[in-house]
Image (cartoon, rainbow, N blue to C red; front, top):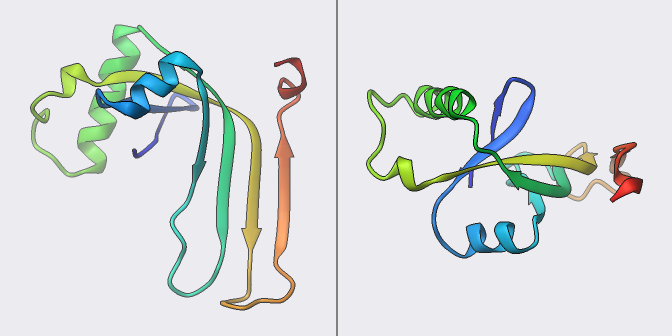
Length: 117
């Protein structure tokens, strides 16, 4: 799953399958970055996702999807992907000086709305 940023929203087109069913059933999610080769920096977010049904936003998301992948046309089956917004409640950013850094720097962000959910 690759998130996309459009109109200051963190969104993704989710293919039919277990991840889609989990989001529909519960909405909670956790995402993390792939580790870098040169260090142990990390990025992790959690929150609740909700499905969006806005045709104009969906068009912009699909355009961004195609652009970011250098595609010339819509991929087959994209119409079956469902659009979700990922609201961020907690974010953890870790910065290291390299592998084995004994003093990684962690920064935590909590949304002011997180305490309401």
